[in-house]
Length: 304
Image (cartoon, rainbow, N blue to C red; front, top):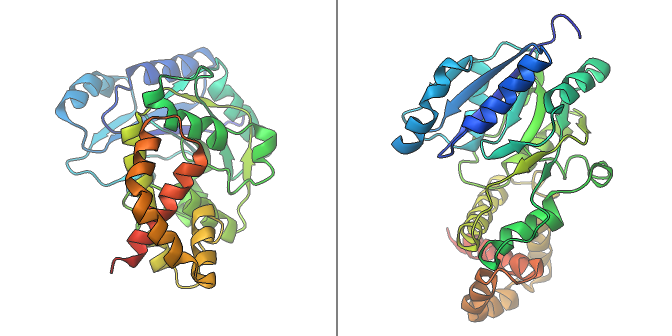
């Protein structure tokens, strides 16, 4: 390994027990004798989870507890203040390590390629859960968890922030957009900013298992939240440069051009409660989810 090569593993923690994750990572660091540190920042979790994770203070390099919740973009940028490695590995706190060589795979790739950004991918269980969790699972398997050969076809669009490595100097130059405070689209805006700076995203097959399966109720409220975030993005983005890649924004912009948006909005308002019911069964197709999100987006765009 390159002597100066050090990795800081950065994990924003929010209302989740991260003991297993930290122990797994620490084992890999010890076993492979890797130059790596773990830094945790807790985004004002409830006292229950603060207590559950508190013992990790002695096991990691730094564990910072925030008094006030600052959200997904701001907290990632905050890690720049607490790390001094050449590379940062960002992991979501609800991830699970499924490969014994997870960290070593990243180290090897970095040593070989000296990359700017690497996305390792994600996985969920192949067994379909109970229908009350069906919607999130369906979305993950059909849209999110793409194999590496498929991700390589659209490296910026198929980037996610749950499991990625970034050169510290790159993140300093292209930080996360702190204007996005709500859930949704912060990863796409970040990858678009990388693209604008002509920074390459490498994709490798080194997934994290996502074990936090959300209920349909939670996932639907997140879908609504992301429609709200997208409305905010479109309104703040005069020339639509940022959002033009996002499927939902594309559909919206096309409809405004053709004037069909009024008809759509009318149909949506009449059928909204039926659509929500259908989605909450967990058996609906993702087209129904798209219909819902577009309807919500139009609603938020119409609000002043």
